Amino acid sequence: MGIFSVISGQFIDVIEWKDSSPNTMVYRYDRGGKEIMMGAQLTVRESQVAIMVNEGRIADVFQPGRYELSTQNMPVMTLLQSWKYGFNSPFKAEVYFINTRQFLDQKWGTSSPVMMRDSEFGMIRLRAHGAYSFRVADPKVFLKEVFGTAAYMTTEGVTGQLKRILVSGFSDAVAQSKIPALDLAANYDELGEFALKTLAPRIESLGLKLESFVIENISLPDQVEQAMDQHTSMNVVGDLQQYAQYQAATAIHDAANNQNGAAGMGAGMGAGAMLGQMISQAFQQAPAAAPQAQQAAPVEYTGETKYCCECGQKIPRSAKFCPECGTKQPQ
Image 1 (tube, rainbow, N blue to C red):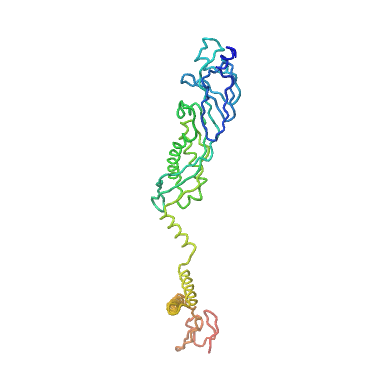
Image 2 (cartoon, helix red, strand yellow):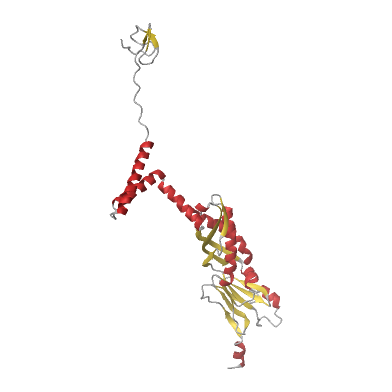
């Protein structure tokens, strides 16, 4: 091996990153102690962005594509280095690959109940959970504000902070939506869209973008759920009196089929007394029979006048027909 081969082995000719993990967000290219040669090939794949950092400062940002590193493709780096030793000299810049694809199926949930003021139940506590997705929208801001100078970063480095932001924003979204507690289950989609608009601006300062926010379930306190179940049962039953009569009739039927001797006899007697009371109440509550049609009042004769048998007006005694209603009068 000649000296030229030893020297050329200290330079990097191809720079690329093949992402094989589903949750890697940033990868710093490992130079292995070698320097990057001017004219090296830089390959940036789709859903990637390459950032060159020179002496702690962001120099150049490369979008997806293939680049030959030169003074034309690295204007900021050229200005920083000034290339005192010629344009073919190697340089020691750090190359960071930022993953810009969506990170899906990230879970969120309320670690403690969220207080909510409801118009029907007053102050109640809610628990909720769901999923969200996000991506790196501004690689330079993300590198400055979140990543720093580490060599490797996954979604676990940001999901903890994101969950706290999302839960806090979800509480505000529920309060601002003013959706009653009984109607929350029917408005998951609408509430999720409203929360997405509310939460998205909160993570933009980190260079991230919230792509989706899904609510899978909102659970109410046990007391509220019991009240809801009782309310539903009452609506299903309808007329409570008819329901009570049905229950009593069912009890009578069960008692009649019970063959346990004295116990069954006692239950049957109690059921019979209840049935008698029910029948008595039914007759008492039954509408009174319509009164019979009023019979025609008998004609009363008082001297020279009498009363019409139909309209009751006073008419002459000798009149055969009533001058008021025309009804024939009995003689």
